[in-house]
Length: 444
Ligand SMILES: C[S@@+](CC[C@H](N)C(=O)[O-])C[C@H]1O[C@@H](n2cnc3c(N)ncnc32)[C@H](O)[C@@H]1O
Image (cartoon, rainbow, N blue to C red; front, side, top):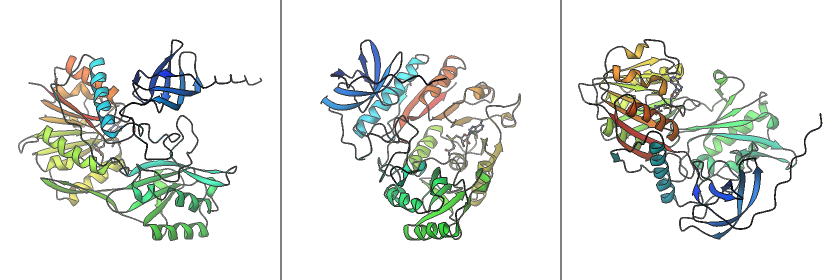
């Protein structure tokens, strides 16, 4: 069968007006009655653009000229901002990014059940650059360029972006992307490395190389010499997560501390464990969660999707007892060790699949005064029905998806008798369209 020839894309457009910003951070224009989604365009702007894709019901494109700029437009700090898919909002002033995220959260809640929080929490913000300590970067040897590329994917494609540096990654790696690419380029296995995973707490910085062939002795020497010179620790992963190992002399203890007014807690973790990417914002987030949950000395608290114990252990310092539930057995083991090392004896951890829960899951035994929920993007709908029966008067919901938060909030408020007492934005990923938030639900 012959391949159908692709229709050529239309010529660059004339001037169009940008009506609004979509949830992925693209400017929305109407051209001949169809929506067109434009990277790099802001509401109120007049721009010219080139098409990057045409579909039956919409088009996609990128700005080539800004004819009338928004007063909220900012000069991207990163020279790769036009092509790199790591950020989508560097052209929008950081304060305007936060206003936009708050508006988006309000609209999403309103759209899913006419919900409006009784109180808006002030947005939580931390350093807008060099914040990212956890990331998965693509690696690709490109024969045509005669070199290896390391970076996020190009926007809208699966190609690795040709980055020299990155402004949102922690500088330990963000400032060394070009040097790391040159290092990998000199390895015998340069064509067999699809990915690097960055893992970093407060101390050492670990780079896990996903490899499809074992590095040679010469490769190991190069990697360890580079690691020693730049303060990086190289690990390799030849198969599943259980195969991750440090190269000789490269092992590192990963940890971060939660230095909170009432608790100084150290959390140790492994390179591929879930950890919050932005440690500065994480400390503020945990602090705010404690203030809103307000665990009392005689209360039992349930922490669902608890990971390493990021919220569980600080809660344990204030409550009578806390039970953390988590699906990843490795994280549960780390949470138990973290509790022990911090001298916390009133935190219990249960390994359970919260989406596939049996009729009477073990964590529903007994009653809880309050519940913290911190689910992945898919949200917490399957377990919400259990919560009123547990006696929970207050639910603190930490969300990484406004859509599933709004869906779950609709169920809690319009189905299960809770009030939406407060909500607010957490700027965990500045310059990206990722929207993290926190909401408080109460029941009399
Ligand atoms: C957004 S993270 C929050 C982790 C932790 N609260 C923190 O702040 O570090 C979501 C957690 O949910 C866990 N998880 C994902 N699917 C799950 C499931 N089906 N059952 C239980 N836990 C799950 C993940 O392993 C991850 O630790």
